[in-house]
Amino acid sequence: MIWVSWRQHRSEAITCLGLLCALAVYAAVLGLSMRSSFGQHDLATCLARSQGTGCPNGVYSFMNSFGSLVNVGFWAVLLLLPGLIGVVVGAPLLGRELEMGTWRLAWSQTVPRTRWLAVKLAVVAGGLIVLGAAMTLVITWYRTPMDRLIGHFLHNAYDYEGFVLTAYILFAFGLAVLAGQLLRRSIPAMIAAIVPWLAVRIVVEFALRPNFMAPLTFTQNCSKGCGGATGNFSVPSATGHIGDLVVGYGGTGNTQLSFYQPASRFWEFQSIEAGIFVALTLAALGTAVWLLHRRAA
Image (cartoon, rainbow, N blue to C red):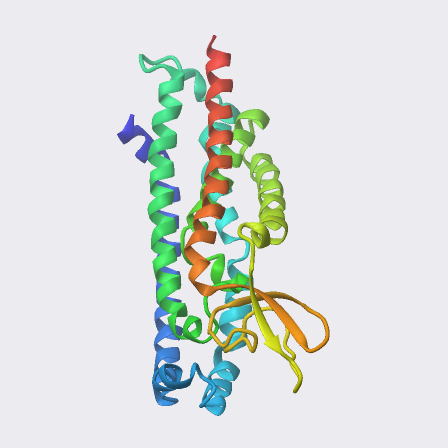
């Protein structure tokens, strides 16, 4: 079964490998350029001494050269990529069998159809996990100079570092497998899976993620004036620590309360969000297995 699964999905595997190689080449070229600029401006020493406040010109020059390209352009290109990988690999797994009628041969062998599906899911999902982990490592290495200046909590860093990238791919895969079984056609299943995948990602990112953990509070005396904006910049004025995510302000009179998520919570947030998407993936795949078992009955 493992060999048959490989033969059936080797074209997807080769395509994903080519995609990973292209990503690695791009990341190497731009990543080395960023590291060179980072060293030329001696930003490592400046960050160690003053959290970047002692070298505003160097920080500005670096961000002016790479900020838009890395934080906007690269993110925009990769925005739908995890979902596209998942649906392109997942939709044909059952959809192609049902669409082309090859299920009559595949399900008439000595291997029960539920076991047949379980083995295929395990092989393909395992490959996607390896792909997601490799992409995460490449992107994390590539973004390291930028992350040292702005941290990991920005959407364009958070969504592609840590555990969540792999979880996004698996969730799209699970939805596509289920859609392929229900619609019995590969292309419609891809479309039917990518829409709810994107909808759930938006809900989790903007509605659930900010509430994973209660923010901490930083109190400032503003008799001489305070200020600031939400988000995380080179050094958030409220906390003075790179990577902290300021989510809001409050207080009365001369006292300002800054509500923020410390940079140290990055992995806790990643674990919570990845857990949500893995649970949804298991629910989708479990439903697909149950429907196939029910069909067999």
